[in-house]
Structures are given as C-alpha cells and as structure tokens.
Image (cartoon, rainbow, N blue to C red; front, side, top):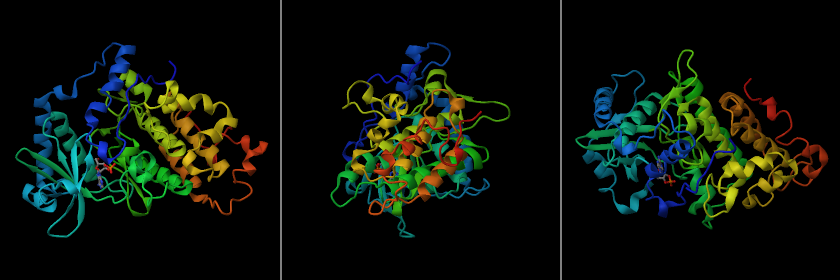
Length: 415
Ligand code: ACK
C-alpha cells in the first residue's frame, strides 16, 4: 500500500471558536471505515455510540470503587469533588470560562474555592457511553502516572449522572492553537520559534517515553496529536486526554487487538488496517506531530489540494530529495532555523512515519535525538557558520539530510 489513505476528511479543530466540533465524530471511526474499505475482515468498526453499554457500566462499577475510595489504590492521587464544588469553581460553568470542547465533552476554566487553585474542568458529555469508558480510563491512567510532561489530574467527580475531571490549568493552550489556531495569529503572541519547537517536541517525546517505558504496566497513548499537547508557562508541553489509552501488550505478545480509535491523519496505517495496536502506533502519531511542528502544516488540511491534504503523503516524496528539505520548513519560521537541525528533525520524523511499524524507532531513541536537538540552541542573530541556513546550502550539509544514515547520536530504526 502507498501512504495512509485520506479520503477527504480532516481534523477540523482550528481554533477555540471551532472547538464545538465534536472530536468523537472525527476520531478514527473514519480511519476504521477507510481501513474497512481496504480490508473487510474481522476488525469491523463498531459505532462508538453502540459500545456495549452494560460492559462499560460494569467496568465503571469496578473502577468506581477504586476511584471513590481515593487512596485505596496504591499511587492514587486524584481527589474526589462534589458536583457543587465544581459548579462553584466555574460559577456554574459560565460561558466566559469555556475553554473548548474535546472528544469527552466541554472544558471550563475554574478556581477551586478551598485552595484558590486555577484548574481546567472537563465535563463528560452524557450522551455517549464511550465517554464513560474514557472517563474511567483517564482517571485510572492519570492517577497512576506522575511525570512533568503529563498533565496532572487533580481530581474527579462521579456523582449521580455527572462525570467530571479536574486538571491542572495549562495557561498556554494547546500546541494546535499555536501552530494552526488563533493564538499563533494573535499580534501579541509570537509564532513559535525553532528552539521552542524543538523543546516542545523533546518534552512531548519524554511524556510518551514515560507511558511506554516507565509506567507499569506500560501504556499506549493512542491519541497523540497537537491538540492533546497542552502547554504550561514557558511552553513546557504536557500530554493530555488519556481516554483512549490502552495497557500495552504483555509477555511475548506484540500487539493489543482493539477496535480502531484515534484521530484521522495521526493514526498509523498498520493499526487502521488491522486493529492491531502496538507502541509503534504511537510512534507514527508522534512522527505526524513532529512533522506539523517542523512544517507548520496540519496533519489533514482540506483547504489544500490533492496529496497536499495529507501531511505524510505530501512529505514522503520530499524526504527522498534532500534539496527540497528547506521547502518543508514552516514559512512562519522566516528562514530562522539551523539547517542541520532541520535535516535532523526531518530525519526523525521520516523514521517515525515509516509504513512498516518495525522500522519506526523506539521512543527512548527519539527522546535522545530530540534532547540533543533541543540542546543545540539556535540564535537567529548569530547563527553559527556550521548550522546557519546559508552555510547549510553547502553540499556537505545537504549530505546530512534525512536520508543520511544517522540522525543525532545515530538514531536507528529498530532491527
Ligand atoms: O486547544 P485548547 O485551547 O486547549 O482547547 C482545548 C479544550 O480545552 C478542549 O480540550 C482546552 N484544555 C483541555 N485541558 C486543558 C487544561 N488542563 N488546561 C487548559 N486548557 C485545557 C484545550
């Protein structure tokens, strides 16, 4: 197969005004239907709304005990809230505190009355049982996780029909906002510079590394995308929205069989086709995010024509022609990036979005490579002769593009 097919649907989350768009509809039921068209077989798409309600409810019952006991489970740190406390924190979900809408439901900024802490409160959309399952997964996953690159879950509310999650507030919004949305266009908000982009990429990779390599049991994120990378002060990135997370394969298993979920444009083609979820599915999504960071293009952009609509489909032929690498840099960078750094970042992205999952690198190697890139601070006023854009038009630098054998510290695809 060629690149992942992208039959004309896009992630439409452009800015806060458009966040009413329901992510659930976008999530890869589309990838699933595309995959189904290609391969009708055992992995039939279920309608998320038709998720087995009794099993979701059962799961909730089991988990609710863990959740409502608060502390009964080792490492469990989230705190229970009453609905009244969250109504008070948001002044009854005042519209001016509305931050946006994700796959799970609406998100409001709030201030906890007892501690004064500013928080983000996500309210489960009660129409979908899928949301209830996501609620449980998110509470359990985030309660057990503790890493500076994962958004902190402060608490939850499971009262009557109400399901809400309370997070630390991320004042700089999402990476999506900055790359493609209104924040990036605001006159008082500067475009992300190269150094910040590399720091964000390295931080997001560290969050993913924590899920894959440090959590016990390891977790596959399954929904890595720019709108799920939230930014703290200083542009510290944190992964959020763990509703689709899955415990990774254990023992000698290589994959988990699931129904295909995720977001169109970010979903690995192998996972979309087979329903077999692996850690490498996340690596593909990470590659798409990294490409967005470098190019400023969206994973799916319906305003573009033909193969340009799908970022990976657009990038693949360019990866083969190193003279074209500078064309891939975000025009908003206005040429202010280190050419060698651009090549190396593209090399990492190219490896991540390879079609064959085994050829994609491990997250630990990506972290090492991106840490190196993030440490190479680029000064546009004083670009070093070796890394400046002009110097890099030399043959030598061109030979260090994505097709060169190694990226920083020799990142290699898995054997
Ligand atoms: O892209 P945004 O500005 O960042 O709009 C979305 C919206 O809520 C739906 O997900 C925002 N959001 C989610 N969680 C948080 C958080 N912890 N802090 C700040 N904003 C958040 C997200």
